[in-house]
Length: 510
Image (cartoon, rainbow, N blue to C red; front, side, top):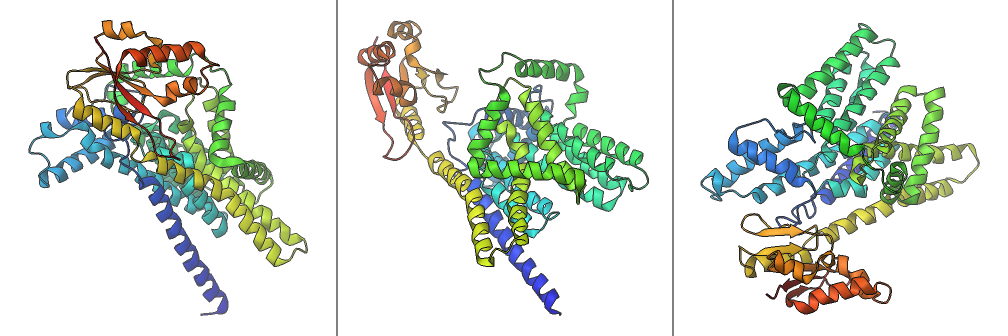
C-alpha cells in the first residue's frame, strides 16, 4: 500500500468512527425520555395517528376516514401496534385485544419516529459526501443536535417521517444524476411519493428529481423517459402508501378541502414568514443562522457558475420553495419547518468549511486556521446541542405526572374535572374532564352549576397575575375568589431550577 492509499484508508476509518459517534449521539438525544408524558400528557395530535392505528388493528377496517394526514404513517403505526400486541401477549401482558389500552402502544410508536429521526442524520451524511467528508460530518453533526428535530422525534407525528423521505428523495436525486438512468430517477420519484403519502407538503419533494433530471441531459434513454419514470414512481408510491385517497375519493376530497380551509383562514398578527424565521433562529441560534445565510448565498453563486451545479441547485431551491409555500399558509407551527432542516444543515456546513478553505489563499498560520475551524464548529454545534439536551432534561417526569398520579389515586372515577393545562389528559372513560386555558374565565358559581367536582390550577396560567397583582388586579382577584371558595387538596411544586409549572388540585364546595 502506498503512502497516499494508507492516508486515504486512515481518513476513511476516522470519518466512519466519527459518523458512528454522531449517530449514537443522535439516537441518544431522540430516544432519551421517549416515554415522557405517557399516559397523562400526550403530544398534541398524537392521538390523531395512534387512535386510528389502533382502530384499524381492532376492527380490520383500513379506511382511515381521516384526511388531515394522507395515511401512510397511520398504516405503519398499525403494523407496529400489531407487533407490540403480539410481543405483549407472549409476555403475558394481556390475553385478549380488548385488554390492551391505547397508551400501551405509544412508546413503541414514538420509538419508530425516533428511528426515522436518527436515520435522517445518516442520510444527511451521505448527501454531504457529495461536497466532501468534512462537509458531511459537520452537516450530520448539526442535524443530530438540531433541537426542533430532536423534540419532534419524541412524538407519534408525521413531521419527522416526512423529513426522512424528503431527505431520501434529495439523496436519490443526486444519485440518479450520477448514474444517468431513468430507473434511478424513478426511485427518487418514489421517495417523493412516500413523502407525500406521509404528509401532503412532502409532495414538494418531487421538485428534487425533476430539477435534477432537467439538469442531466445525458439521461438514458432520454429525459422524457426519466420524467415519466419520476411521475410514475411518485404516483405509485403515493397510492401504495395512501390507497384510500383513490378508493374513497369523495371523502378524501371533502377532507382535503376542510384541511385547506384551516390553512387559509385569518392571518396571525405577524406574517407567517416572520414567525417561521423566528422559529429557525431559535433552533439554529445566531451562529447557525448566519452560517445558513452564508451557505444560501454561496449556493446560489455555485448553482449559477458551478462546479457541482446540480447539487447546489437542489440544496438551495427546495428550501426556498418550501419556505415560500409555508409562508402563504395562515396556520403556523414550528414543526412544519422540519423538512427544511437537512438542507439548512448542508448549507451551514458548506459555509463553515468552504469559508475556512478560502483562508488558504492568505498567508495565515496553520495553527490559526485550525483554531478558527474549531471555534466555528463549536459555535455552530454547541448552542443547539445545549438546547436539545435541555429539552430532554425538562421533558422527563415532572409535576404533570405527579398531579396525574394523585388524581387517578384519589379522585372518584365519575368526577368531573376541569384542568388548566394542556399537558394533562385524563382517560375518558372513566373520567369526565375538560382542559381550559384559564380557570378565571368562569366564575365559581359557573363551575358549581356545571357540576364540576375538581379543578386543577397551573402556575403557567395564574403565575403572571400572582407575581404582579398590582399590574393585573382584575385577573388576580378572579383567581383569588376561585381559590378561596374551593378546598385545596394537593399541591405539586417543581424542584429548584426546573421550568415545570406548579399545579394545585382544588375540590369544589357545593
